Length: 114
Length: 108
Image 1 (cartoon, chains in turn blue, red):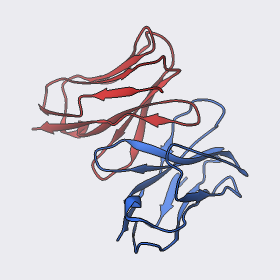
Image 2 (cartoon, chains in turn blue, brown; image 1 turned 120 degrees about the vertical axis):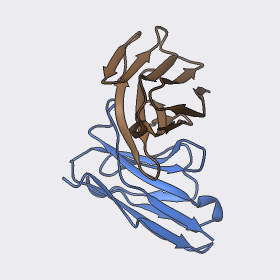
Image 3 (cartoon, each protein chain N blue to C red; image 1 turned 30 degrees about the horizontal axis):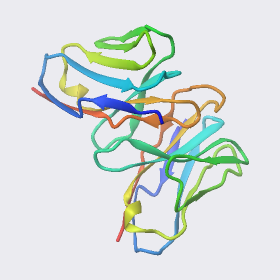
Image 4 (cartoon, helix red, strand yellow; image 1 turned 135 degrees about the vertical axis):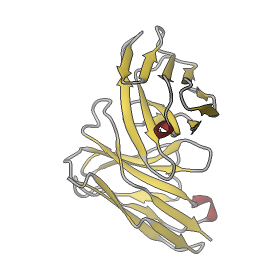
């Protein structure tokens, strides 16, 4: 199993551009989520999904959209990039959204917005 | 709202010394998870505690959940250079919340 994969690994955007960060998992996990990590801070939840077709907001959802059309994929869309969105983005998955399970994290996408 | 403090923010030890990081909450937690993130890497799950007073051990690592389920600690005995990284506590159900982390540096 590849686990949780994320693409791209690095990305530089200009203010106002849009892009999609890809996340996929091959463990048949129901729960998937997106976090951002800023220097000196912990991870903050952006959006999460407990199954295909179901998404919900986390702590910092503004400026981001998600959809979950399949169990495997959970893309994160930046609608109009801003410098404040410069961060490291991690996708994570777990077996079920119905209990507290360990989270498996992807390698991250390092995003810079100029 | 619920506030959880993780202390210390940073600790630098000599190899062989012990290390402890703490998570303290203002309210009762349903569970606590611990993760380790190596420099430049991604968080990796270490353990989950759910019971009051629970203690779990993984080799040199000892995890505790307080009797009132408001605090937790991670203790590393005789640190090694491979222990370098940031240790996070996290809690919650579906909306997992992470502490700010404790960065551990180990000098040989």
